[in-house]
Amino acid sequence: MQCNTIRIEGQVCVDAIRTLHMNTMDTFEFSEECHTRLEVEQLLTECEQMLMGVKMIQELSPKSLDQLVSYGERCSGKLCYSYVAVVVVIIFGRRGRFLFHFSGNYYRRTL
Image (cartoon, rainbow, N blue to C red; front, side, top):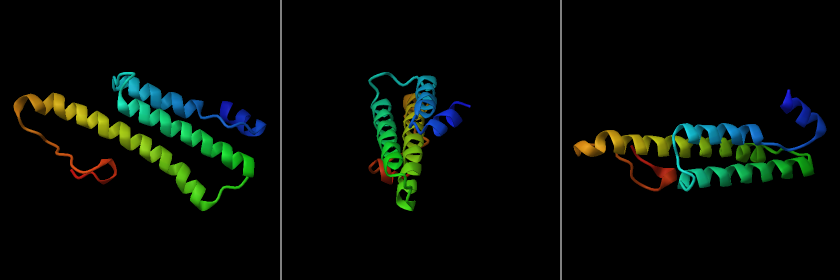
C-alpha cells in the first residue's frame, strides 16, 4: 500500500529496499564499520539518486533500467560474498583447509 501511495504522489522512496538490506546485514551480524555495509549503503544512495533522475526527466531508457537492476545485483552480490567469506574463515580456517578459494578483484572472482 505504501509503494502505491508513493507512486501516485510521484515521490522517490527506497526506504523499503534500504530496510531490507540493513536487516539482512544485521542478521549476518556485519558490524557498523564493515566495508560491505558501507558499500551497500553507498549503492543504495546511488540507486535513490538514479531514481530521482528518472523521475525528473520522466524517461526510463533501457540503459537506465539496466543500471537500476544492477544496483540490486551488486548489493546482493556483495552481501552474499561477504557472508560466505566470513563463514568459510570461521568453519574451515581453524582446520587449515578451505572449501572455497576466492581470487581476483570483486567483479572477477573465481571460485
